Image 1 (tube, rainbow, N blue to C red):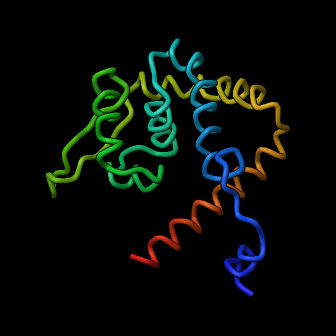
Image 2: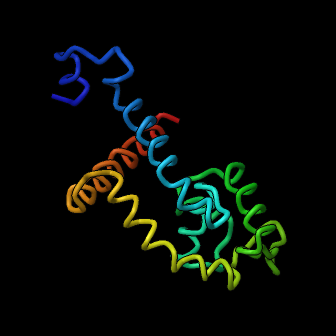
Length: 157
């Protein structure tokens, strides 16, 4: 029996508060609001912070590679990266062999912001009111759901 067969035996949710998409959507908004006071003192928005987190994993990558790392679209990430460049945290350089490629490099100020990340993470973990081991399990479960959704969407295209 497939999972869709299992679902047909159950009453499907019909109100926003019981839909998984709404739970993720509203939790995302709450998470963004929790980050805001920590990031505002650094002069960053949440999308800028996430882009930096992706670059702290390793810079010298293309915009496309960062988009894959962050599950983002180029059209979404490019304005964020341009703003980070104006703030002096990122340098964007055209590829030497292919000028269509844009490589991303952290500046000294972009690297310096990384030392603030553990404190921010500790505060956010405390704000969730969920124990670290349960949060780790949740991250794994949500990641698996995301991967399944992407795989199934791609198989239908």
